[in-house]
Length: 217
Image (tube, rainbow, N blue to C red; front, side, top):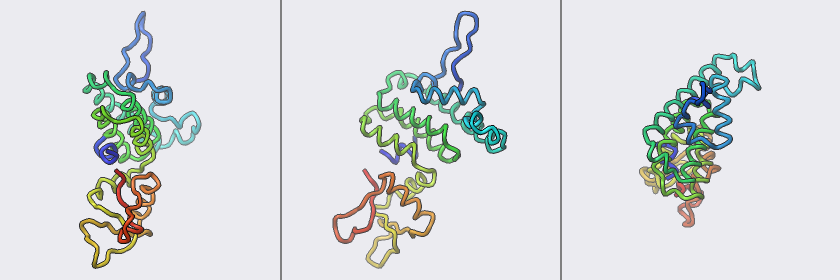
């Protein structure tokens, strides 16, 4: 479930006109969480750049403009997705609501374009997880928030392996089932990150699996 959430998972409040308000977008309706609402309001006020108030110098950089554009585009696409699933949106469980909100909050603090894409998929996938349990939602939310784009890519690419080890394969190892990663390589850092996230855990208890890792279920 964790793998699927990561791999396959804009307006702010309307301005008053005469006696009525502009109807809220689908994104606003699902993002009633206080933190999400505040972040979205700030996003609109600052043209997609939450850093502008605290760091005026950074806000004038080209990187800041690019980031604002990426976030605004992603939020608009999420809003479209939510509109396409209006019936599901109306019947969201508390756990689904948490997952969608956490993905949107994570997006607002993400500079990686690749992770932004993963977060958009996470929102879409959350709409199909009507049976997700509250504790599962807590764990998935933590993964959605903290996982890096490189870690998510590694997880998706190598999920078919039964074991991961941080030393070379020997003649007894099945290369189709065991993935060998050098601890000094970039993938070694990724494996360490997945271990800290709880997505890789000790394979044990047999001797052959000592020091090896397997993907958490």
